[in-house]
Each structure stands twice: as structure tokens, then as C-alpha cells.
Image (cartoon, rainbow, N blue to C red; front, side, top):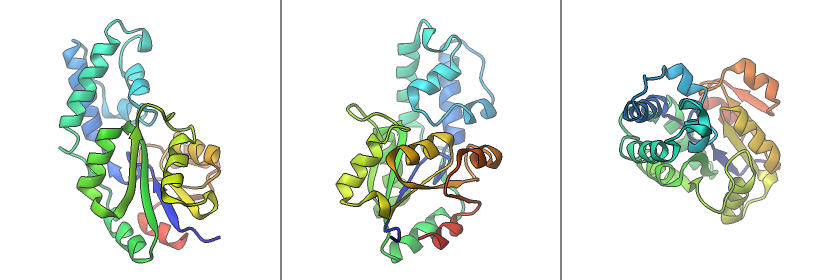
Length: 214
């Protein structure tokens, strides 16, 4: 069955959010009296939601004594600073225009907090995204299939006609757990050698290559 629907991950797939994420992490660390982390550290720490990001960027992880306060500061800071340096990767808007013209339905699923996902999606992609879903209560975050299943139910689409597009091990696992084919992209937060070990159906190096799959 040809794909009628594409579900995108957000960070590292359609939006380069890394600098704003790094700035938010380091603003939180400054608030806690800690030294800043390099962008390379944050790059390897994102993808599993805010809780895991905090565990990977605070000393002691979940045992950090001010974890709740630091997390609240991070969430608030990022929500008001999420569009400073963030933008679509080159070729992404052109890709979405072509998919739209072909009648492909598009959605985004992210472990980023839901309010930020919806705002970033609205701001950068407008009407291209039929559904935009982030981390929220009642739905397990990726790599659980819950969020993907919720989107498919809302769209009225089957797993067989949907392609999941992401840049990380979390995304490949999400697609597998949800029973979807996966296209892993190499321009995001993980490198090709890692992606090749994860077994996605496709690996693509440029956004326009996705047009050959749908």
C-alpha cells in the first residue's frame, strides 16, 4: 500500500532546535550555579523528553536535590525562548509543499512538551501539519507507540499507509513499536553509523529523498 500519511519527529528532523535547547539547559544550569555544558553534550541528551534531558544534564541525574525546581525553570525558560535560533532544516519547507501538493497528510509527534510542539508547529509549518502532538499526561512518550496510535486514530489512517520519519534511536524504536515503516534522517542529532545499526527501512541524507518514498 502506498503511503498516504507521514508522521515526523520534530527536533533534529524538521526543526533544528539544538541551539535553543542548549541555551535553555545552560540557563537552567546557571540558575543552579553550575557550569555550562557544550552543545555536543546536549545533542546526545535530547530525544527522550524533558525528564530524561534533566537527568542527563544535572549532576546526580534524578537524585539531584533540586530536580523539580530546575525542571520547572527549564520548562518555563524554553517555552519563552524556543524560537530564538530555531528554524526548519534546509529543504524541509519545500518538501512539505511537495507532499501537500501530492495529498499526503502530515503530522508531528515529539517528546518535547506539548505546548512547545503545538506552538513551534503552528509558527513554522502552519497548515501543513494536520496534527501536532507533544508530551502530555495520559500518553506515554516515545518510544511507546501511544502517541503515534493517538495520531493515527485522529487521522483515521492505518499503520500500513503511514511512514514515520525521525533522526534518532528513539524514533526508530517508536516506529517499530507502532508497526510503522521508518525513514531515518542523517542531518539531525544522531550520526549515520548509529542509524545503520537500528534497522530502519530507509535512511535518507536529504529531505527531497523522502519524495521518492511516497
